[in-house]
Image (tube, rainbow, N blue to C red; front, side):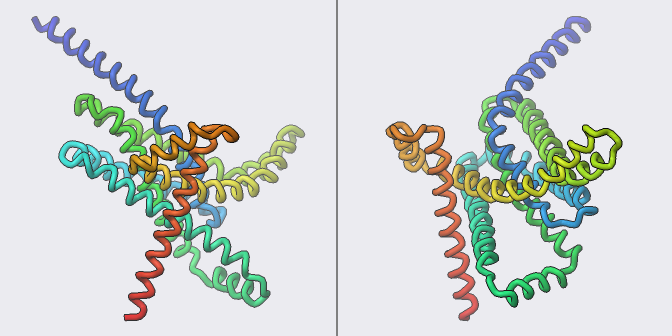
Amino acid sequence: MAGSSLLTLLDDIATLLDDISVMGKLAAKKTAGVLGDDLSLNAQQVTGVRANRELPVVWQVAKGSLVNKVILVPLALLISAFIPWAITPLLMLGGAFLCFEGMEKVLHSLASRHENSDEQREARLSQLANQDPMQYERAKVKGAIRTDFILSAEIVALTLGIVSSAPLVNQIVILAGIALLVTVGVYGIVGVIVKLDDMGWWLEKRPSVLAQILGKGLLILAPWLMKVLSVVGTLAMFLVGGGILVHGVPWLHHHIEALSALSEKLPGWLITPVATLVVGMLLGTLVVGAVALVNRIKAGK
């Protein structure tokens, strides 16, 4: 009897692990699109930090990301169990915040480009020079963790949607597994990206000609890659935030799909992200305007 009970237990465990494996693969596939946005956003967030502090900053953000997921996973399970209708509105609020941050970055970039006079540029450089490096670093870390919270919430919500009909144990294991995998994967790659220039410098000093060529290539690539990631990271904010809004508003999602299906000149795979990007930028503009109006009213009082 004991032997059969043990075999039954092992069979149950094997079945459980098989279910978890299948659903985990499906969840990883579904969240892969968000990971690209997550990667570009977080690589962008640590730009501007001193070279010797890049990896410590990435490590601090990674720890903050783990804390985010420790909060989000049980919170998502509780919301799903008791108030499942609240998941979409909460995600939409997070998406609106992402669009707000993205539009603020765009406006800041435009304002910086309009600094034509030498006095304006010197004043801005002086302000940056007088800023406490540790304070700047803390602000970067705080901003990156805040952005990660919203992206992590979307990943957790997507995963939960896939495993919602599974037993509670399966849900917990898959959510925890995806959360850990995402954190290790994303911040591991971010750590490599921010140290590309150091790797290039190290390779350039090697005696091997091939290593020297590779090192020079990395030194040329690194600054351009960071510039590209800065642009892609801002666009990702609009795409993620706009995508959450589009999927949360059925009629908007329906009209974008209909537009994609009716178009003859442009492929459908291009129309959907462009429309999502436009929605995200419009949403960001509205939120920035609303925040500016509230601040003006407060200042008037």
